[in-house]
Length: 523
Image (tube, rainbow, N blue to C red; front, side):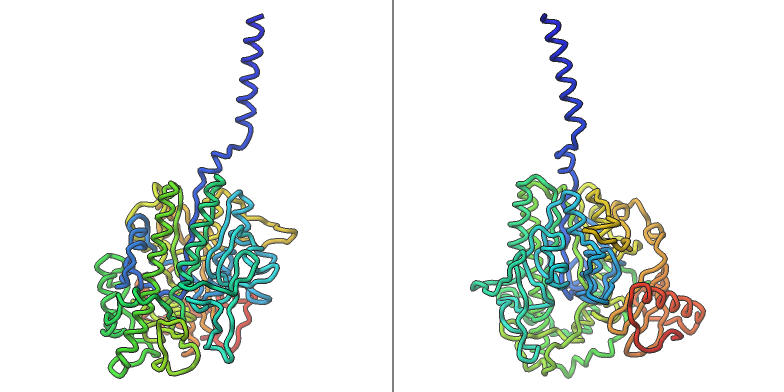
C-alpha cells in the first residue's frame, strides 16, 4: 500500500512539473527589458554637454558615459513627420493625415506583446478616434496633443496666432483646461511618467515609456533660477559659440577635423556686431535653462528606475525630433519681446538656431545635416559597451519600431484591427547597439534613406548624399565619407550620379504619396 501511494505521489509530482513547464512563464516575460524612449523638441545637435555643448547636462552626460553615442542618426527635420516615423517605423505618408488605420504604433505592437505602455508629453499627431495616443496603443497618456504651448499655463492662448489659439492638453481621453500655480510642463510630464511606471512595475509586467518633452521648443519659458545660471554666458555670440563647441567635439573624439570641417556661416545668420547683445544673451540663456531643466527631470526619471530596482534591465534612448529651430514666430521684431516669462512667445531665431547644430549646415525644416542629424544616446547595461562613440553606423527614426519589436520579442503585424498594415520600412539596430554589426553591416540591406520637408529634399545612398535646398533650387552632391558637414558640392563632377540619385528620390516620393511641386528633377 505504501509503495502504491509512493508511485501515485511520484506520478502526480511528475505531472505537475510537466504542466508547469508547458505554461508560458510570467517570470520569463518579466526578463524582457523595459524601454524608456525620450525625445526632446527642436534641440540642436551640439547643445548638450556630451555632444560639445556648454549647457549643463550631467544626467545626459552620465547616460552617454554608461552607453553609446551615435554621430549618424537621423530624424525627419520636422516635429510632426519625425513623430509619425518614430511611432510607426514608416516614412511619412502625408495625404489624409500622418497616422492612419493601415499603420500600427509602437504602443499597439508592444501592448499586443504583453507590455504596459505609456506616453508622457507631446503627441502632435491628432486627437481623433484613430489618431489619439490613448486610442492608438498607449495605456496611459498625459500631455500636449498640439505642437507647442505655454510652459507655465498651457491653457493660455498662443499670441503668435491672430486672435490667439488655445492648445489642446489632455490626460488619457479627457481634456485638461486648468493648471495649478507653479506648474511647468517639463516637470509635469516627468511626474506623470514616474507615477505611471511605478504603477506598471507593481503589476510585474515590462513597460514601454515614451517621454516627449516640449523643451526647448519655443516659447522660451524657463524658471528664473535656471535662467540665472546662464545669463551673461552667451555674449560671445553665435559664431564664437560654434567654434567653442566644435573645439570640444574634436577634443572628446566625437568628430574628426578631416571629415568634419566647420561649415560656413549661414545665409540667414545676421552680424553679431550689430545685434542687441543683452537681448540675444537673454534668449539663449532661457533656451539653455530649458535644456538644463529637462536634464534635471531626466535625472529624476533615472533615479526612479534605480529605486525601483529595474535600471539594469531597462534600455534608455534619447534623441531630438529635428535640429535647432531658426523660426521667429509671430512676425514681430523679436528684440521687443521678452524671453522667460509666461506671457510671451519668443524663439532663439535663425542665428542661434543655426549655431546650435555645430558643425553642420542649416537647421529645422532643412534636410542638410543640421536639420536631420540628431544626438542619439543608448544606455543598456550589460549589453551596450559604456562610453563608446559610434561614428560609422547609420540609423534613422524608422528603425525605432523594428528595434523595439526585437527588444520585446514582438511581431510586427500584417493585419491589425481588420486593416492591412503597411510593411515596416526601418530595421532593428539591436545588433548595432551591442556592437555585433560594424558600420558597413549597419547600412547594408538598406539601399537608401530619403527626406522631404517644405520643398527641401535629400537622399542618402551609402556615403553619397544628394540635397536640394529650396532657397537655391538646385541639387548638391556630397561624399559624406569625406565631408559630413557638406562643405564641398561635387554635383558638377558627377552629373550621372546626380541624375541617378535624383531619379531614386522622385521614385521614393511617388511611392510614399508625396506631391512634389515645381521642377528640379534634372537639378
